Amino acid sequence: MGRLRIGLAASAFVAVVAVGIVATDRAQIGRVAPDLVAETDRADRVLVEKSARRLTLFRDGRVLATYPVSLGFSPIGHKQREGDGRTPEGLYSIAYRNPLSVAYLSLKVSYPNEADTLAARDGGYEPGGDIMIHGIMNGFSWLGRMHRFRDWTSGCVGLANDEMAAIYARVDVGTPVELRP
Image 1 (cartoon, one colour):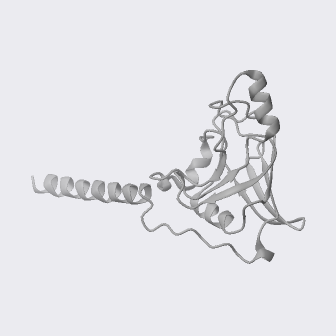
Image 2 (cartoon, rainbow, N blue to C red):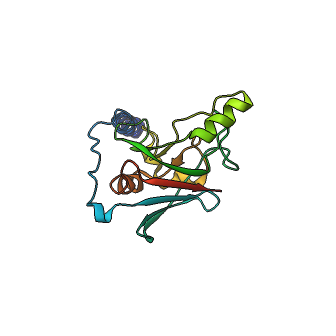
């Protein structure tokens, strides 16, 4: 009976610690957004290659860094409407930086552009929005790099949190973003 009590107590302790970690992550307690690096070390272009599941940062034509990514849950083809699960394709830019996102840090992609809005209007539907480059959803940071096993976003570009922190420090508002098929 003594071993059973010790086992139950240990299990309860592990459960409390796990809940505490998830709650802290979800509440963004202690989250500090990284400062932008010196301008000479910042990306002047972001390229997302959907078929390769890869995001690359460039400066003056040279590669600064490359990261594996997850995409929308239905990644093939250009985003056409709200809720289609597709990640857009085309030329956009970073509209703003959000340190307190529903995911670990985020960079807003300027989707929909004028052409996207007109195409959606002509089709009789909403184009959607809130396309971001972001880390793991708050409360799920424990997934880490396991997020790459599946395309899981609603149309965004998802990365591990440490990778997102590195990107967030190197990408400013206005940086061009190209999303290729």
